[in-house]
Image 1: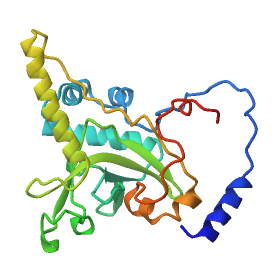
Image 2: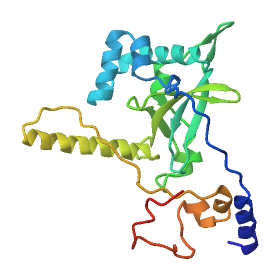
Image 3: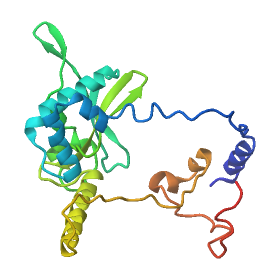
Image 4: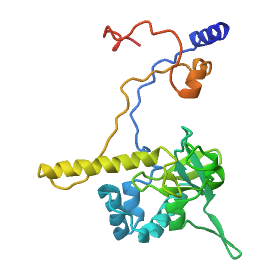
Length: 262
């Protein structure tokens, strides 16, 4: 890191003004999760039989019944439109380290009329340009067909932006031959494998065959640095971790710094 640049950043950070404590006010969580197509929204907008089949897929891991896709898509569209959404996107996590979206509008034409439509096929399957994303050398660019598949275990949500709002549908992203082209597909496969192994163990102990919930907790330690320092570090920009620099002034020989003053 250039010494002069580091000095400028340190000076700017030192001049930051800290806001005082907030005025006391009652906590308000009434709007929490209002833009998520959650259990309550599903129960409200879906026919009872369709809701029960979808919940069996989400809660018990049963195969998704393709026959209910149309009803789910219609309910999801009506819910999203009522909350201001005018378009939808299959939202996925390619190997770029970021999220990706392929946007389409609900607006279609029916002869001379404009209608809002969202079919079960559009919900279940999408086909973004896979040549735009890394594949780890799995296939040539001209064979870069990639498909997004709806993951019903993750609830759809609405993303608001300057041009309105978009219905985001969480999906997995894989190739025509089934290779994972994202970070979610391996996660779903590992959850399925771990769930199956756990159920076998439960059977050995005479426990009932129930749903196994796999959880992954975040790492206990977070390291926050000023954005201006981050932009001066090519190792953090390229890899997201420290590759060079001086060792920390204090390691874990002592414990008093874990709960130090802030």
